Image 1 (cartoon, helix red, strand yellow):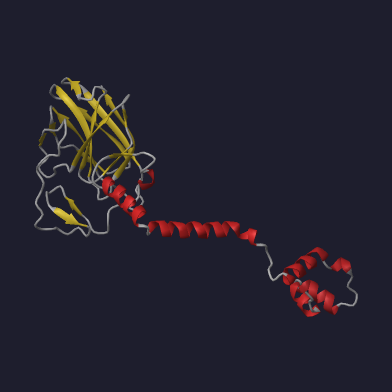
Image 2 (tube, rainbow, N blue to C red):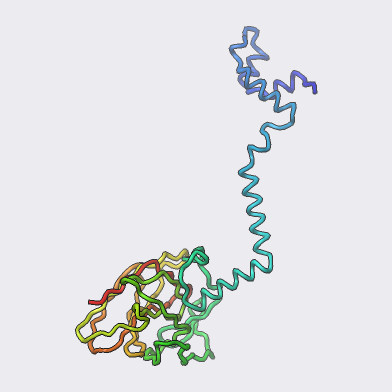
Amino acid sequence: MNLKISEIMECLPEDQAYKMYYSVTSDKQDVDMEAIKGRVYAKMHKQKKPYFVYWKQIACILLVAFMALAWNMPGVKAAIDNIVNILLSTVTPITDEVRDYVGQPLESEEYTIKGKDGKYYNQDGEIVPDIESETVLPENAIVKENTISWMTPSDISIFKVTDTQIPEIMIPNGALAVFTNNREIGWDLKAGDSVTISYEVYQHETISEQSLMIGYIQDGTLVEGNILRNAKGECTFEIESSGIYNFYFMGLSSDPISIQSGDLEIN
């Protein structure tokens, strides 16, 4: 391929082209010859950089295209929807399979939650009429009676506390996470004992404060607990009468609350 002098000159930096074209005293030291050869080579081959220089950009484009395609595949989308439905309906251990959903907005833009006054509210804080309150406890081995007048748990799941450690779990709105000891039953406590429960939650991406109720179950009876809204905190229960006690977390946020760590100590 032949090149005109004018085309070669167009490839040069402006200051070097000026020297070559206008200065009769310029010599080879005034010009970076390697730069000239590289620019002329690029001009001859109609490209300035080989394609492999752009491999990162190409890989990103292909990845985004694949993800967009996968999201629209019925099987993949159905699997994702199924995971979200589970996380919105039952207390779930935080495993590798669901960790990507921790702290993420899962609830749809339109939702209904039950307030402490027993009424139902939509996403705009408006009362939703004609919704009957569920009063039947979900089937479980521990909670037999509910004394919380304004809330009936939508789900009751049971988790062991090992060496005082509360496991990582995601708790959807209205669901109850009940804690047991290593014997898979409650703690046999006496009047004068005390129990301190501490916790820390994963920060939610869009909700600055999520409400969590912490309380106890005495001899199968669910007792209204304390509502906390901080990212971390603790509360202490002074045992007034002997019995078999379990302790619980209840989610009171529109999106699941993700417990990062927790500790339950009997004193």
